Image (cartoon, rainbow, N blue to C red):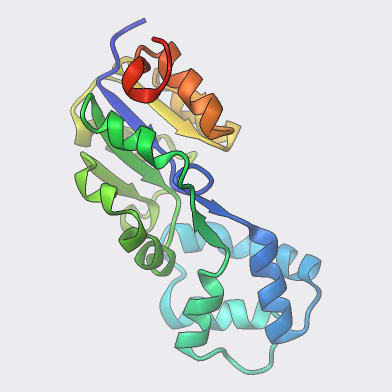
Length: 209
């Protein structure tokens, strides 16, 4: 197995948890539609939102409509609702911190401007990442191979020398198809094991390498 030069990390459910049911309940409280109906209505919004083609007031109007409301949420309320379902994955951060001293670390995330604005200040270690590859800035979203190629170019490493962690198997498969060492992220404890298997364990990560 080639030595790992770069580790690519997902944002949602890796560095920060997101509980979608919390979002659907908050939108239901605002607009009155049942949470399960809101879930279905938002399915059509996620991809353009991640690609940055649905943003700003247009996103706010579309989400308000999906909630069942007849009035559009004001900007402050929308920001609070749209970001209410995130919490930082504190257990994984020390491991990422230690990785930063050993290899290049980059982010590959399907995200949007508002949620990125909310999360970035809560994750100061992102300032030390080698690259931040964000779907809404590129107009690309996982599993599009080009978003992974962009990440490879930015870190300057060949795919076989890179590992990618994501909680969505289809995205891991897309990275693996390019030769990247894809890993399905499940828990912080398993992340330690996976890093050790990649040769990135050892005492500094609390794992026998």
